[in-house]
Length: 305
Picture 1 (tube, helix red, strand yellow):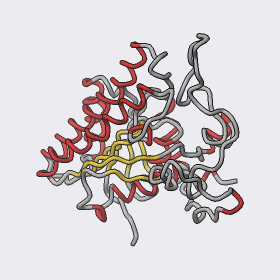
Picture 2 (cartoon, helix red, strand yellow):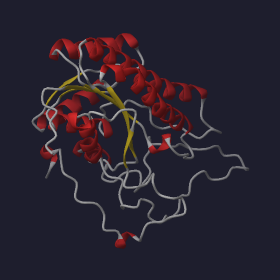
Picture 3 (spheres, helix red, strand yellow):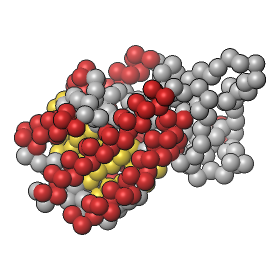
């Protein structure tokens, strides 16, 4: 089965250097022309440059996913430039945050706004364009394991990722008569593999060592506090031994956006090494007893070496 997105035009929101950039690169490597959105214009530009280094075609469309005028403007720039829009990946989200005892109303509202309005406005206006022009397109919203199970210290993130899951199912019903598919995709703490990101912050991911600015934040200092997370040495928790990388995510999202997935809508696709399927009482074998997955099929060939 040779997946091809040739002739298709894709928009990826939140194309900053980790998951969004990995998905955008994958879509381009499979033949799509990709428009890279991010609130940070430099992040959108860096994603374009990564795609072009690998022989793909892309443009930067920076903008605020919560501002309807800006969403309309950058989507119009895409359709004016390329004459169509086939794929939308809603990846923009606000990371960071704290638990329910410590989170501020301001951050909670902002995080929910980015996810809620970002998914709504982009899906609405990309969907309207596809429907009006008879394009049986694909829309994918990026969820998280935090949208399906509880994790301490990320109350806003958990709230809005849970909302993404049912937004997808409802939007899939709205757009099914037009042949437009809407699905979610759930990754779990992937290990970064973007060479630029690794050069900036070093190898490894949040499973190896927590990062400043990642999920979860400090709690208060009251005497009655109990720790929200285990900080000591842990046994392996992922059955396959790894949750993968943005490249693994990119391969799967590209397939989900391809014509081979023509009847898949209102569903969630999970790439997490079996983490979500695991019973809470089950622990995988010791690290030296895990065969692990097959080697990843690389996409960022220009970043090798």
